[in-house]
Image 1 (cartoon, rainbow, N blue to C red):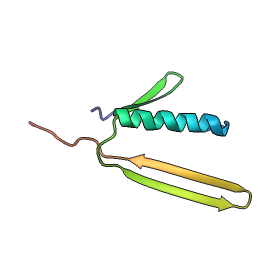
Image 2: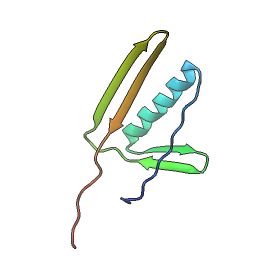
Image 3: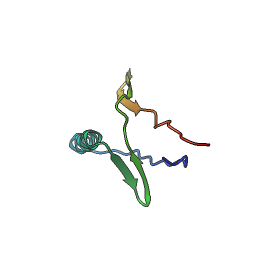
Image 4: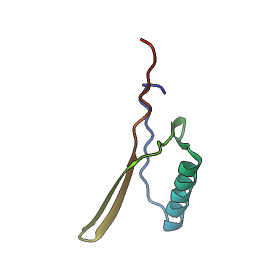
Length: 82
């Protein structure tokens, strides 16, 4: 695995059906063992570990409600040789 930093981010407004479609694609990709995120020419390929950390934040603030989901995992740390 490369030590090179790569990042793709997106924020936008879309219908609930479209959000659900993206979440279903994320779920299917995680089950398959690899998740590719692309925006324009930028892309990141994530390969989840068997053990993940899940963080969930739900907020209600006046007329705005939000839900944040974060998945994180450690990459392989095996090194052989010098």
